[in-house]
Amino acid sequence: MERTLIIVKPDGVQRGLAGEIIKRFEQRGLKIIGMKFMLVSRELAEKHYAIHRERDFFPKLVNYITSSPVIALALEGPNAILAARTTIGKTKPFEAEAGSIRGDFALEVDYNLVHGSDSPENGLAEVANFFSEAELFPGWSRNVDPWIAVQR
Ligand code: DAT
Ligand code: MG
Image (cartoon, rainbow, N blue to C red; front, side, top):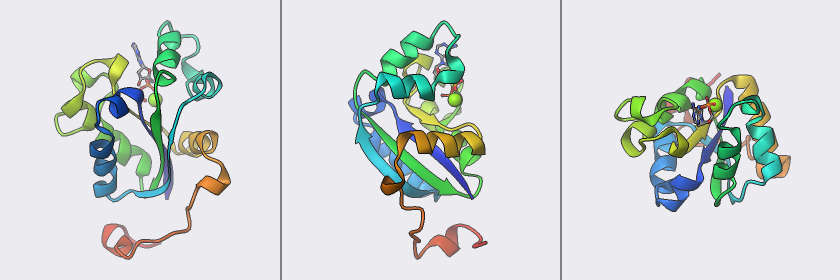
């Protein structure tokens, strides 16, 4: 079972695509264990994107993610990392497959609508950066779970 941090970025919320974006993860079968509407602080943005600190686009990236409210989700499921990233599509939306979120709704890397963690380790760490323990409900189960994934 993997955990991934999904962020509906400011452009996704501003464009009224939050429901559409969340729907795609929900219908994929991933389980929501946390969700909140929030403004990302500069401190959190710099921590979240620390790996990109030396890149020339880093200031732009931090400005963008802090510019307007986002919706953060913690999702769980088997292979949640890769499943979510496939649903999201390639980083550069003009390269993203039709049918993916970026491939259907975005054009430029600067406004690529949604974040998804890129490894199981980062999924755990990023969820912990965005959510307190009290905001997460990993224990709940859905009646349909056995029809979505093998129960291990
Ligand atoms: P992803 O969001 O697909 O995981 P990433 O982790 O490589 O992509 O980069 C994080 C974000 O940084 C990405 O969503 C948009 C921005 N970014 C990445 N590469 C960029 C580039 N070459 N120019 C401008 N922004 C870029
Ligand atoms: Mg990334």
